[in-house]
Length: 178
Image (cartoon, rainbow, N blue to C red):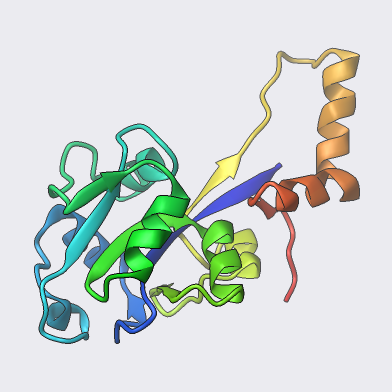
């Protein structure tokens, strides 16, 4: 019924603007230790992780084959809000966040930046189209065939009002145009 984009978030004053999937893996495995290795200033990277099994962390680990391989971070936080607070206050911090939540914070002036991945900007339309690769599907599963009430709910979620709900809940609708 939709998508969840996963954004790599840095402080707005960090010079890094774009990162590759390989660099993301190196960053969270601890292979990249300073920002100059990624095009930034020569300063130590401060990784802010999320609580194991919570938020977008399990999907990031799964997509990048990082299960059990994450470097020990400077701190571990539970919510997107706390990760955003820490990253916005530290030029060397990096974390991962729900893309829609991150975009909303950038829009209201919170001093964070969501990095482009492989030269693709972190935008809803790019998540929807598949151009932005760090994403996971939101699915509804039922028995085949679904009972009438379940079918009605699925139909609702796939149409305009349901897709509006997907967006309101900080996820990405199936089709977003620029």
